[in-house]
Length: 187
Image (cartoon, rainbow, N blue to C red):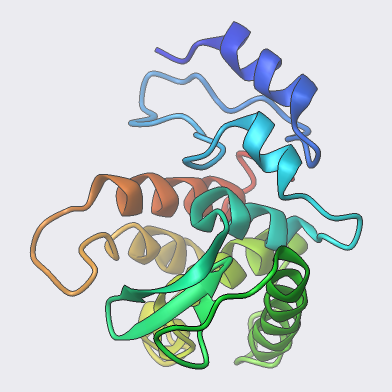
């Protein structure tokens, strides 16, 4: 069962707080996690220019100055592609790269198909395709043929990073994206 006191404590310290408490219905398998970093760390890496989407992405990506291998590329900053395997960047450069990528991905989502996405849906999908690539939007929508409800359910299936195993951090991220997409949580 969800710990409401813990959520209130996190909410009061978070720079981009959740405006609604997550549902505590017994049918919910996992409550909104708020990411895999602490509220204190989220505040340390927060910038006034952050959007709801960039703040959500940061909660899962954190900040790393040095390039490091990440599935099929080297990443640094807040999970953006590094220019080479030894690149080291500042948090300010990382913020610029993240916001540019979020703006690009948001525009891509807004112009995808005939969905008329809500703000929550765009935020969730921005995090989703930031993590999986733009091609994942076509996959999760089945080329634009799925309903929004089917899209939300399909998002929950992308938890293995190319393997058959569920990776706990990805399970948590997909659940949070689902909760935002479906309006259970509003950033």
